[in-house]
Image (cartoon, rainbow, N blue to C red):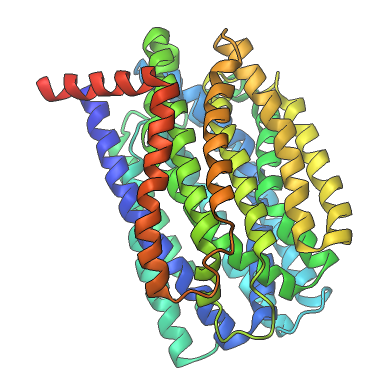
Length: 501
């Protein structure tokens, strides 16, 4: 267990460092794109980026199915069986890589020579190809090792490599932007750095996991749920990426740019949260299969604090983000970037999405993908149909409303299944946490609105943010402690126990 504690600590530290670097750099480049190329070109680049995020669906099913299959095997150190699982995964990735290559060529031709943009067709073609190369290498060579490292609790190695990649590639991109306006060179820098990083992770895994034998007879049964998992992953991909593509088709690329600027702030915060949580979920996943009593206790702590902390974060974003966006987009006049209603919808969407994530992790730990695939399927249908209708009526905001409608359905069904079918307890355990935190959010929104500090200077915003954050965080802590003391007392006992050791 002390070995796991060490890996959790390393994962947390590396995640914090990686996300700090990523967040800092993620805001710099879009601003430079807006200044150098304008909102339309920024919208085109964001659309291409989202299309390639969709392309990850080719491996999404087998990736998560492999992760779930390895939790028990790695937890019990059954390396022979783990090799058989990864042998099957390797075989699947080879076939997928060939399909991926064919689709990339199709997308490159479509966006370069069929769909009209303000960027030269040959430039668009090369950008698509350079964007695809790292993922193509990953399919054929590295992806299976990455899964193994995450299940084994060595996410910190990946995080450290990603941190160096972001620093090096973004420094290169900025240098290119300062010296020239070549979009091809910008993408080439990232492509080369990504390939170097993937090669490093490949050789690290080969040294660390000498027991891994990919020539073992593939255990395809272990990842037989990959198609059901794919439905879940497709639903998540629709939630995260459909909005940009629908807006680009039903509105225009300037609208995509507006959406993308708001999404930068929310996606980076969500990535930060997800990265921290993934630092210890490998231990929860293994514990689910080896020590159910301890798992139930730890899951209660996880659910309570996850919901509370994410509510604190998104409440602060609701109150203070709009003036930051105004400062960030100042001087960019080819599109209107101030939209209080859009910001409020982004906050509500992310609150609902995070409310169901602990319950959703139960489905991942238990491997009940097939039994719950229809929830994910209906979520996709609701998301796309409502979004299309709402975008035609309301524009950008309609895309968020469609996602909120889908999330409400999926949240209710996921909370029901995880509590009643897996944990064998009342749903009120979860709803109590959600109601308490939802009430605090409503009270704070009654005191402030998303545009309360609109047009404040950065210094004014900083001073108000420091003052009001103290009582907002304090209110959340006080209310959660009053209504859910068990989680607080349990975590205090665990901390005392560790200190006394």
